[in-house]
Image 1 (spheres, rainbow over the protein chains, first blue to last red):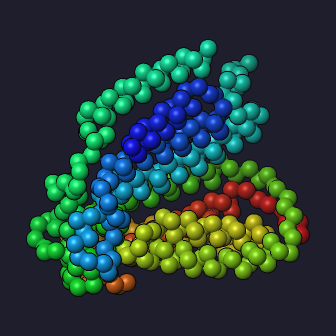
Image 2 (spheres, each protein chain N blue to C red; image 1 turned 60 degrees about the vertical axis):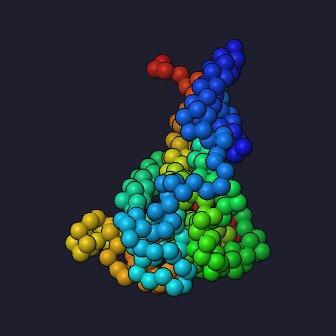
Length: 112
Length: 245
């Protein structure tokens, strides 16, 4: 079920990326796409009735119920990279607005 | 017209994506129960290099990896080199943001008494929580990145609420570069002592204790300090504000 949610979010993000030329909207679409991809990756590692992969004072047999920690570690990296990309993109958008007075890529003229 | 074309393209792509994902990995029908052959089984039982018995919380000693949180064990021990690259990416993007936003544009903010007093009251609490999160990264969910983000949020809150900087930007930059060098030094120490870059060279102790898991708490503290000082430095450095109180 969650895989389908992730793929739908990826599709929404892709639609947002190709259908608009507004930079801020493109960044929002990129973030939705990333979120969908992350949900998809994490949901692959889910097991029925699984718990978070952290050893606690519970019974020792809890290790067999752990969800897959490997996709979670991958997604942790992806989240940080996504944060960096979004920050840099927003800085570029701000710079663009300062220089051209618009956030829309199609309104920037070429060389006069 | 453009939107219709992009929607059509998207439908084709989504169809491709769903059929591919459904057929290649069969993810829409996950196997019932637990598959014993899953890749991360050796990570969970902490015997990637073969050997150890069942892990018991608060009893097992000198495991291959003493971190109770297995995602942390993967991120800062088995795949620590990847995390070093991740920290580098964050540093480069912070550098880019700082360079692009050096505008000198000033924003005037009016601050009431409640905002000023509230910011001063909340900032230390948020900071201590951030430090707690990154020092307990091997025991609880969390770690260097969320802890560092909380510290950055606290210093931004203080700066927005009171108009004063908690620490000068110069010392933030010094803390950040020191933390970056310390991470590489930890890796080089592992290379010299154990023969492999970023390998754990300390005693892993009893699983579940604060001083366990070898270098993991130190590396996560380094990452927390680095992320916290980096992000708060960028936030404060990139724009200037006038204080109107």
